[in-house]
Length: 191
Figure 1 (cartoon, rainbow, N blue to C red):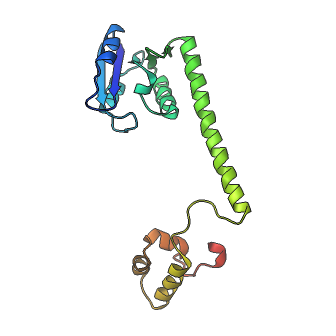
Figure 2 (tube, helix red, strand yellow):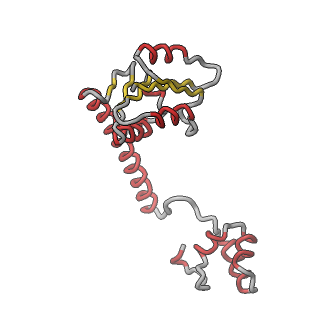
Figure 3 (tube, rainbow, N blue to C red):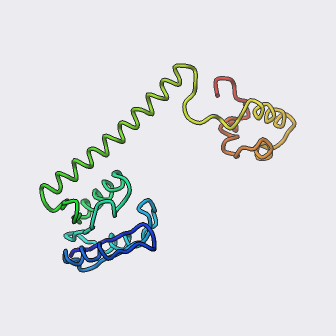
């Protein structure tokens, strides 16, 4: 069965062009959404995916109707492939039921994977450079030296950990990360 999916980004946009193309392609069922591609909540797409069974084909007018980024598209295509559902994009010339279509989609997937790896490499290089000049990696700790000193004084006065955490403005889990339940105060090495 050919299952069509059409999407526009806002309620005032018209689906007619996509619907005409999907009907001309022979779609037996068409689901629609009028919501941004960045939105996770797309009931029309969920409906189309829920109907699709092994041997069916999800037909779209254009790849960008499925999502805004390549990773999302690749993940969706991998899910469809695992379920035995093909993907066809009418204007992009991609049809995973054909050798050429699968090749093109795998090339796009490889590019997306390379992009993720490059981002990771740049992030790791940036963190290494920062550590080299004496900086730390990641976010700054919410437990400032002033808050730490205040917490130590409150603990010494007998306040409960939950009360201390609230008084210094951190969550209980953050408090325990810096002041383990064993009761020992953190050393300079714990920072």
